[in-house]
Length: 180
Image 1 (tube, rainbow, N blue to C red):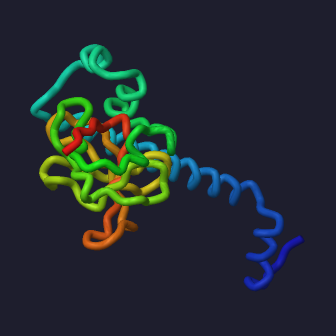
Image 2: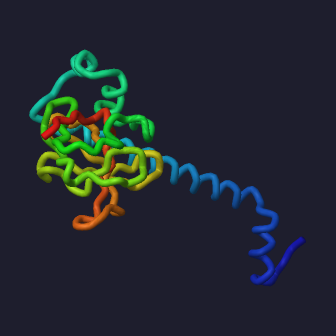
Image 3: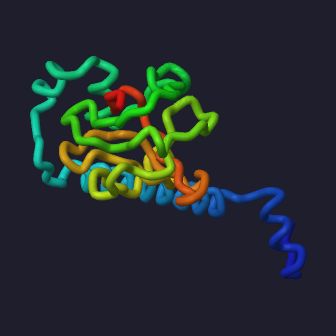
């Protein structure tokens, strides 16, 4: 069947797409996937290219950390919600990096986010944490790392309380706690 009218031709193609259109859709989908994978690789490459004051091999970190702490801090994993030891901690004190001991968060900035991870509205000192774009898993997020050793701590979101409006959502296994 041949349609001469432009008004009829386009709807006909969408009802019964021919191979030419299917090939175009397939090529666009492959291009999108390639771009997404390439962006993830670039993000991870930037993180590993940074020089930190404390550096160790994976073997050295494995000797110092528990298996889950190694997976989260060195391989950018995430602990399961509501399983960490600090998500419901209400004691006063300082949260430090589990890998190098750098002080990161004060309990005064901790709040109940309802997420199952310890959440803070600001770091103890902004220079102690690094924020970096994270496009993994098809999401646009900002990951947070320790500025001294590069340990993955968690992510920061813009849905936190006043005064900053930020929610530093951290993994408990990335942190140690010292009571005041």
